[in-house]
Amino acid sequence: MHDAPTVTVIILAAGQGTRMKSSLAKVLHEVAGRSMVMWTVDAAREVTSDERIAVVVGHEADQVRAVLPPGIRTVTQAEQRGTGHAVLLALEEGLGADGVVIVVPGDTPQLRGSVLKQLADIKSNSEAGVVLLTASVDDPTGFGRIIRDPHGEVERIVEQRDASEAELAVNEVNASVYAFDAAALRGVIGDLGTDNAQQEMYLTDTVGFIREHGGVAAMVGDADDSLGINTLGQLAAVDAVMRMRINEELMEQGVKILDPARTYIDASASVAPGATIYPDVYLQGSTVIGEGAVVGPSVFAVDSEVGAGARVWYSVLREAVLGPRTEVGPYASVRKGTVTEEGSKIGTFVETKNTHLAEGAKVPHLSYMGDAQIGRNSNIGAGSITCNYDGFEKHETIIGEDVRVGSDTMLVAPVEVGDGAWTGAGSVISKNVSPGALAVERSDQKEIPDYAAKRRPKANDT
Ligand code: UD1
Ligand code: CA
Image 1 (cartoon, rainbow, N blue to C red):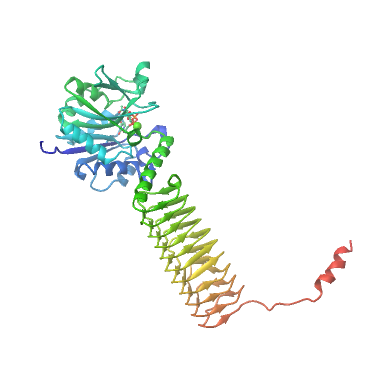
Image 2 (image 1 turned 180 degrees about the vertical axis):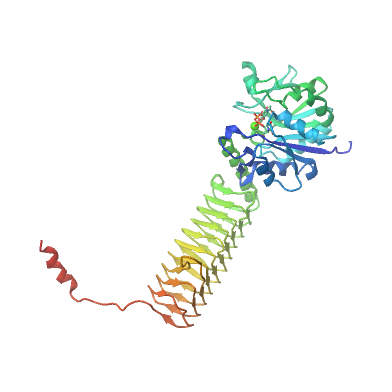
């Protein structure tokens, strides 16, 4: 065994991705909540250090640079003159001076770091000038075909648009993932021409050239794990593959997922063992689900925390922090700045924003609580609303402990309701309520006797 060689990874991400029919650069499309190019950077980080990773950028270069971690360098390819041209520019900037040069497309987020490691190992332990990753597929349309000689050795790669009828029938395709010997790559890259259907410098042509000066080795991989995304259809398919990987890992750790195909957990979210996830749940951004929590069906949670043993169903959470054993839903909109403590409740058709519910506080039905503090064990009657906006500014509503807010109370902020106080149903509360008092604001009920009998003859007159 010789020393492990230095590994450089060049990620190709300059193309527009016209087949995506989208103005967003292809590599910025997200898969399981993370941009394609970042998945590839993370895989590269499993085989080398940040200073040996370079991303070739061109189309929407600034936007692509913006999603990359600070330590990852970029090479600018102003004009996209082909995959070979992209690699040439990186070599010209001094990358891959020696050792192994891995080239990966930025449109293959499902590629595992372990596969890159395997390719690099095969390269290091053989005399081959390049080791490439291939896959056998039912439908090879669009991919470069692997042309082998009668001995089964890889001879060259031919692109779809340049292939003959017989070559088009080959179903072993090029994944566009290579481990080159740096010297072999540098020896042939200058020979690439543009005499092909796209008039581009094809990196694939290096394979034929390297064969003339030594060996080419191939590793046949799993198509699901290695084929690039060119269309929104393929994006959806790879997204499903990546979500399934996330779900399988969570299930292995003890998260119960009832229907993994209908569970959409971003790579950035986390779920504690012992949680249960019903179908149609989306966990996005920095969302964290605590132990024993039951989430779903139908929950859309962004950058939110769900405490241990909480129960959330048919609801939307955005930048909310739910304490242990909080109950939410069905049909609640829990907005930014909502914080709940143990055993509280945000019930059916309730909206909350920038609101704190202390332990055991409950807002069970049809309410809007905005910019409010609700004290321990207080109960907000059905249909109550904080009138927090006077048309110019937002104001606060402060509700003490053990308060009983009657149904359909309008709390005109700024206003305070003292500990243990009550409000009468249907009241418009615009003045502070003293602790322990009942505040009622409504006119006395009148009664008109025998009204129905008087109405009847009149109605029949005509
Ligand atoms: C490429 C391969 C093809 C392989 C397929 C696998 C070539 C010529 N063909 O084809 O054999 O089967 O990938 O997915 O290499 N890029 C640049 N600069 C450029 C051109 C492309 O950075 O000038 C980047 C793109 O952003 C993309 C990657 O290289 O991330 C691949 O480019 P793409 O145009 O998708 O190549 P394919 O036609 O799919
Ligand atoms: Ca591609």
